Length: 129
Length: 129
DNA sequence: TCGCGATACATGCATATGCATCTACTTATC
DNA sequence: GATAAGTAGATGCATATGCATGTATCGCGA
Image (cartoon, rainbow over all chains, first blue to last red; front, top):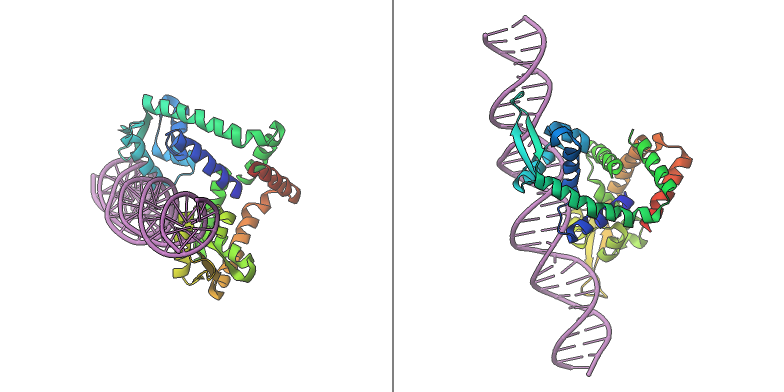
């Protein structure tokens, strides 16, 4: 708990200093970027990100307001929507990754050998089962 | 990041279902409980908990409003205060620990051997240096 | 095909957080 | 011993979060 809080503070700080949005935005942009056609339904984003439904709903509204995603109605399900990453969204994701990756390198990679990092990942994955 | 978010959600959930306050309160109550005389200055709590100054200020206000701590003026430094845990605060900390410990057991201890847990702690500590 | 429970997402309200700044006091400087 | 710089903590404002519930649509069973 303490380690991740410390790390999160460091990363958020790095992003802020670079004039970029908070890390939460990255998670969503990343999922969209990875997704086929750069589009996902909110429900699928929710499952991938561990975001609560109401938080995701509002985060998507913010992303749309900033022009990083577009939101379309689902033609097959009147209740559903599709979030589609825009080219600006792709650019922001990339800019964020540049900073985020640097953060990880500086605050994590420099403290652990590759082998240790792998073992850490394995242990954490065991907990998440 | 994901593992701790998942864990935090689980723990917060357990606390909520038991009618207890959020985990953040525990951190402060724990520090006070450990501290000599059950009292600390906000500044010292801040250092121990990684809480931002303004967040701690308001968290202490909430704790005081709920009667879990008392706040006294520092006789030696007119700017300073002392937070003092009350008997109700002690009781709440204990009740929270009962639930929290159960959460840890269920969500962490059951997934790792003692040896693995030790190694995990060591690796995380390496990062926090 | 009607009606009802389930599903997808949004939102009003209370509370928590971040940021900047404020107030009150203390300590060092001259 | 007056004044400026520093320190401890609080707070107004904007924004984010949690909770409960709302709205719209879907799909199933009679």
